[in-house]
Length: 438
Image 1 (cartoon, one colour):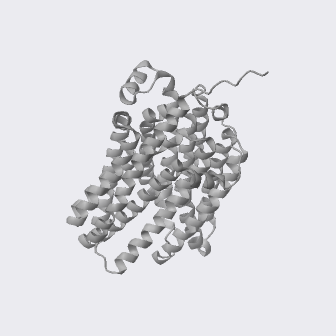
Image 2 (cartoon, rainbow, N blue to C red; image 1 turned 120 degrees about the horizontal axis):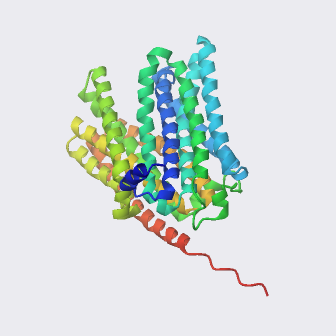
Image 3 (tube, rainbow, N blue to C red; image 1 turned 30 degrees about the vertical axis):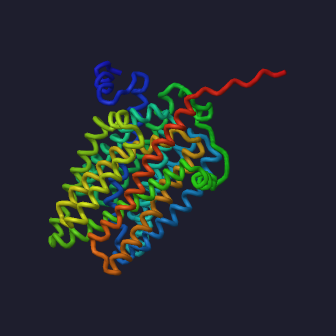
């Protein structure tokens, strides 16, 4: 690889020469995953609600059930298959799913179009959580904690770049090939992600301080539900679970605030669509700039715990502002800043937390937290907020009531930083040699 390229990357990311190839393969792996999803996402929006918006609650319930079942199946696969088999098999499975939906939409006819659309909505909502969770499990298995703090921001930028690319591809191709035939594009992207995952696994030398099982990516063993048990028994994993639940709950409360404020402030659907488009663009640009140029430096300067605490601090400021000024400008600025902080700082730093746990926890417990807990927090906060609104609570009151939630979230972030440091220090201590046989 060109010395100029390596030098430029080292100035941006603090990457060491022997890590450049692995970092770039991880970047490309995440790029193709999210590029595929952002082609699938507008197709889901087109077909998934074909049966009427009144059925959305059942679609979200179906997604939660599918997530529970998928977590159990994934636990069984992780226990029995090594990483080199597990990762490509799962991604090939999802790629074949895409082809199956394409065939059903193409030749199934109008009689089953609505039912297939609903199934596609549920599948897509499950798909994105699952493939992204598996990606970060794999990356946390390949890189050490020290590497993760330096490199995961840049790796996350691969996903942001893929999201921008996938959106661009969709906008350019849909008029030429039609909505249904767009599904052939994410099939290709998933296959390219599989190629990148294989190259990533072979691009780093054995990691110092890791077990031989981690280096070889062997099967974890254990039972189907072991990951859930481990997540509930470990104070450290319970902290990560709480962080995820509080983040999801706060985000859903804010999303419902956004819907109410924008609906009241803007009557024109086209104007609302334009606003959402500009918000998404601002989020992606701000996220990409932060991931490439600042994430690793922020983590190095203030540590894992305080970096995780930036997002709840943003929410504290934001909910306070919404409580005082329940206005369009406040919600737009808050949404852009909190989404960019979440994608560029909270997500890659949260993934660093998993670099210091066991391989079974990296795959099984992480998948449970990233999928079931995520969807559970989503459903819980949506139900509570809807109930509060039906009882007459104002948007300002709900914003102020969310502040204690954010305070607890900040405390969890700080505790996770201390827990990560203890586990990282313990991992760095070489094991004592076994006593000689007598």
